[in-house]
Length: 377
Ligand SMILES: Nc1ncnc2c1ncn2[C@@H]1O[C@H](COP(=O)(O)OP(=O)(O)OP(=O)(O)O)[C@@H](O)[C@H]1O
Ligand SMILES: O=C(O)[C@H](O)CO
Image 1: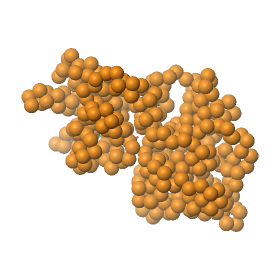
Image 2 (image 1 turned 90 degrees about the vertical axis):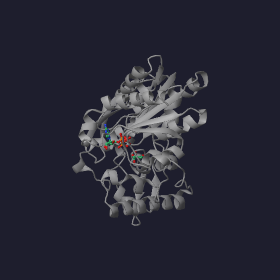
Image 3 (image 1 turned 30 degrees about the vertical axis):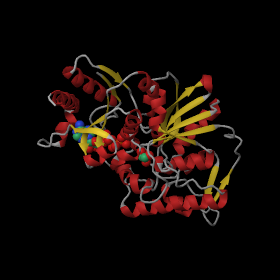
C-alpha cells in the first residue's frame, strides 16, 4: 500500500507537520507495510514561506515595515540571489494573525507593509516577485501595495486617500508616480482562493467577517471594491474584477494584476509543483491521498488546500480521504465533489476543547479505525 499525506494545519490545535506525524502513526499501526509519502503544503496563505523552505533553502531577509494598522513592525521575505527571485508572504506584514481580536478593523487596515517588503526586494535586485496571498487582515484591493510602489489614489476633489478599506468607495482618480522602479519586474500572485473581487462570492462578503467586519461594513467594503474596479476600468481601461482569484487577500490579487500585471497561480498548484507531486503521481502508483484541516466548511471549496488535493485526486484517479477537526458542511456535497471519505475527529460527547487539546491522538485513532474497518469490509 502507498499513501500520500498532504494535510493542512488544524488551526489552534496542531501544525501540518503534527497532522502528518499523527496520520503516519495511525496508518502504520493498522498497516505496517505501508509506504507513506509526506508533503508539507500550504494554500498560499499563512505558512507560505515555511512550506517553500521545506523544498528550497533561501536567504531570509528581515527588515522594518508596518503592520496592517500602520504600526512599526518587522517582517521577513525569502530571496534567491541566483535567479533574482523574492518570495513574499503577505500575511507576514499584513496578516490577521498580527492583530489581537480587539484590534481587528478591516476598514482601517492596509497592505502597505507588504508593499514596503516588495520595494525592499526590488531595491535588493529582485526581478521576480512571488507573493503568497491569504490570511490577510485587509480588504484594500491591493491599493496599499500599489501605494507603496508609487500609485496614488484620490477622491473627486483630488484629496490624497490613504489606501485602506474604508476609502475604496471614495476613489475617483488614480495616478502613477515614476514607474521605472518596478518596470520589467515580473509579479506572480499565489492565490489561496478562487473568489472574484466583489459580489456575494467576492472578497468582502466571504472573508471580511473573519477580519472583524459587521454586515454594514461588509456591504460598504464590497461597494468600495466595486468602485475601485469601476474607477480602474474608466481611467486605466482594464477590467479584471471577475477573474477567479482576484478576491484573494481582500482583493490584493486584483490589485497586483491591475497595477503590476501579475500572473496568477493557485497556492496549491504552486506548492504541488515545488514539492514534485505531479512527478511523484506519474511515477508511483499511490493508493490513497489523505488530506485534512481544522474545519471543513464552505471556504474549503473555494480553493483551500483540500480542494486542490481533491482536484489532483480526480485528475490522477486516486481516492482522496479528508480528516478534519470539525465538519461544517454536508458530507454528501464533498463526496459529490470527489472525496471518497471525510472523517471528523471531534468527539461530540466531549467539549470542543478536549478535541483541540488531544488532536494528535484523535487524528491517529480516527485514521487507524478507518483502515481497520476497511479490512473487515
Ligand atoms: N482538534 C480539533 N477538533 C475540533 N475542531 C478543531 C480542531 N482543531 C481545529 N478545529 C476547528 O478548526 C478551526 C480552524 O480551522 P482551519 O484549521 O480549517 O483554519 P482556517 O480558520 O480555515 O484558517 P486557514 O485559512 O489559515 O486555513 C478552529 O477554529 C476549530 O473550530
Ligand atoms: O486573506 C484572505 O482574505 C483569505 O485568506 C482569502 O484570501
